[in-house]
Image 1 (cartoon, helix red, strand yellow):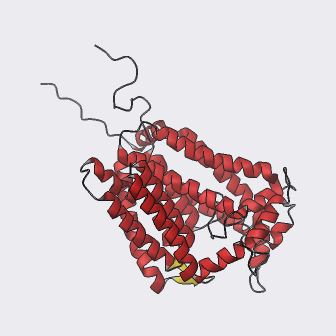
Image 2 (image 1 turned 135 degrees about the vertical axis):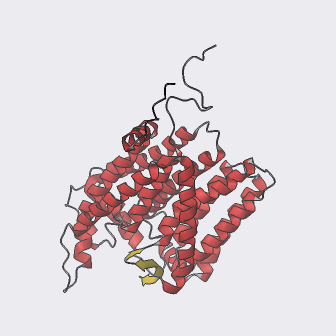
Image 3 (image 1 turned 180 degrees about the vertical axis):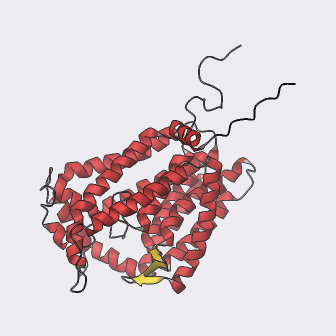
Length: 389
């Protein structure tokens, strides 16, 4: 009797080969382009922020935030790769576990969180980070998973359950207060609800709830009311948003050149919230338009990749994560263009950020994981090419 040799174990190199074969390389290229823009943009705004934040005791070098950005970007790329290599089921389980952990931390933030600039959003566990930054991608995947239950049982109240999760999440965010993230989560839930086939009546109720959130925030939260009043031209005539818009347009179409900007020197948060204005001043409106096109290409590529997807969870999770990235980019750009009041929200993959950069890279990693597909199989799982009789 001839014994069969034991099956060969598939090592790490095989897993990497499978990952490279199944990953969406076009999407990965768009993400890499945005990261490179971020490196250049932080290099342009680092000196201005370093001078503003230096004190008599602590003098920051001109490239302080640039080198810090590189370090966090390396960590973020590692998180992105680790998430993207997960199988789709494992990525879903990881996101659900992450949502549970960050939800508990959101509960703890009002009591043990660190207060910075009047907002209590940070948890200090060796290093400071915002639980809300990591909760955003986890919320998108968790909501997609809940809404996908209707495939198994159409009678399940998935809209009520996901809506309750949204309401509790927004309530916890408003305690910090973090109005911008609350609005972003509302937008993600709204898009997923429409994608999953929510009846028009419920869509109207959802839209009314979001409008009610904005109105309530204006009347009951001083932070939101002050920012909206400043945006509408109240007592604060020269607000940060106004200064950011003037900085962005001062470079004209082609900009003043790298490190030649002047207005950025008086612009607060030049390396984070208003990095788009710094890019506009030094590289021109053409560069700003190019960044907007990259984010549009990212969203369109994801939707094209998901077109015809049979698995409802995959469709919803990919749509939710793409909405999260595209929505945050849209809000940041609208603030810099003086179309929205200041939100304190960074430009994804471009702004300087510590834990926020890692969280955004993790978001991209989850997006790459749920959009992975074997290029040699059709959507029904059959090999490509003519079928054998």
